[in-house]
Image (cartoon, rainbow, N blue to C red; front, side, top):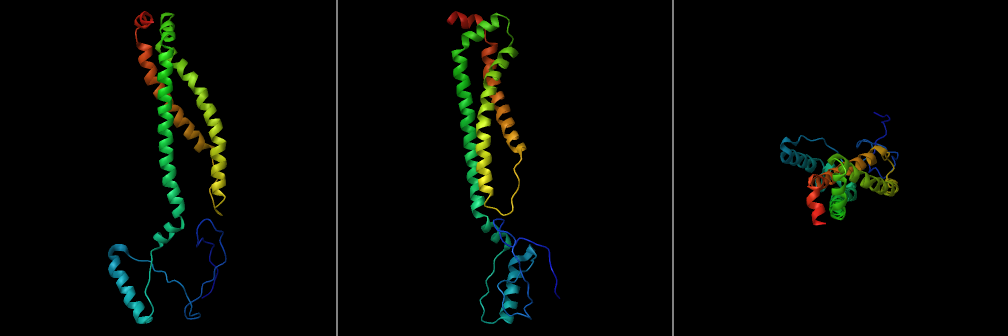
Length: 208
């Protein structure tokens, strides 16, 4: 029986699909691998049965085997390690960023404590004060993203060039990260500003 099958990738995604010929062992007594689809309910007994059959058909030939999921994992071992390293680095970066935002806002509130008190005396509400601080830091987050986006895009694009088959990049991913950082930063700012905004301006001005 002869025919043509659809293209499929028998190597990693780093390589393009190359021509591949299948030959029956009756026609060509040379082969590298035999592939079996196994029932995993009793795997050890199944492997032992295959080993016995192999010894009967090819006496003296060594019986060696591996599982395809392990083989595929080895093909992308460097990518899996890079994934773990990237996840750890991302978490550490986010921690540093949010700690930095927390520290900068706390320091700014101490320096502008009198200003906040005066604004409250002049009739500013808690909402107005919190909105003022959010506006002050919103443009900084936008500038940071405008710098980080091109760098991240070109670094990812360069890495994807190693793959013959790859996914396209979408701006939605970058927008999601920006919104996540922005919303989290706003929560931090609101949490710190709320305490300063609701404090008595009389006590603050008296200490000043």
